[in-house]
Length: 117
Length: 112
Image (cartoon, rainbow over all chains, first blue to last red; front, side, top):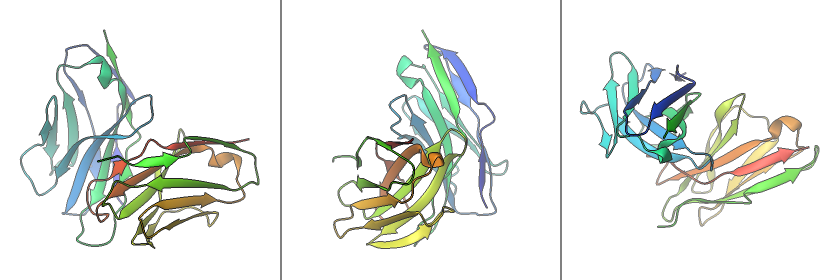
């Protein structure tokens, strides 16, 4: 079974600074996807970024980027120019790749990020 | 496109009652997955429906069930509610179930 570990339960960052959230995972699969989701106080789960394991290039979405180290099974999220609206719980998630059927998301326990003015 | 919608948003029930939660996926999405979120257990997969068929099921008791309609809307039912069923229930949709899942706002269930 796959497992996802987020070792930082809580983090804080000053507005406009950069912060990195860590995530490691354990799998024997070769084809899979990794995600970062954000859950603000409203509890709505919002997709931040997605990475396909077969792609060597790290995914980026505006101020959000990942450092995907496949051999080390590490998938960290970097948030640049942090904004107050980035305050949220961040979840790292794993999904097996498949051409059919469904593979559920496996989530880490989350990292609570507070952006301080 | 409208996002995933869930109704109701909040629900209070007493032990022993049953409850039905509803989820409408993004238009064109045929896969609907349900997750339970609690402070102690985190996010756990309940089940997934695709084309009105349950394709995958998590490790939950039979009191938790669901169904999907021909328009891809899904309902989740919990019978004989227990205090431990208090949670945020999240629904997620995707095109076929093998792509990115997009979440609804959740239904917060409190069992007294």
